[in-house]
Image (tube, rainbow, N blue to C red; front, side, top):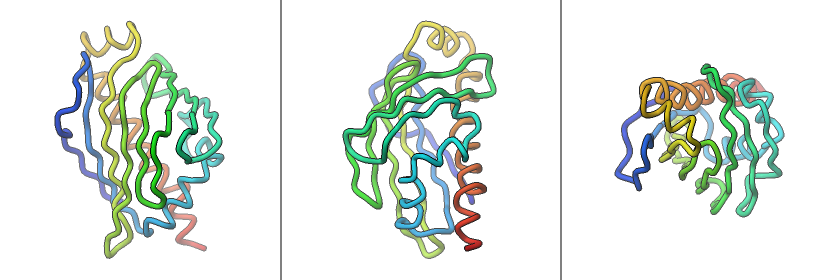
Length: 166
């Protein structure tokens, strides 16, 4: 798996917002990756830092309740509201709670499998996180990047690699 990051195009800027585009090269095609990510019941087995997850599926109109424990001294609680789904390529979602914003996941076919592209614009949704992002922006960025990049590594190790061995 390889990953790249670049700041995304200008989204509506809230104080402390982090707008990114992450690209992860995966050795499976979009349909196979989609089948894995559609199994929302497996999420907590892939990601130990996902302390709470309550979601029924990867379908438009679904709402996921999440609590994430990044390597920082506070948990982050939020809801993911799935707005649009175009299987097996695209998911558009809104995030509300301790973080707020939008995210889009796209799967693009490549010769070696696919590229998963996650574009998001997220900002602190409560006073504590706004203070952390204002006083210690590098810490907020570290927590954000850690969740995305460790999540991608763990997804490959715990979901994609076992599929390749089958």
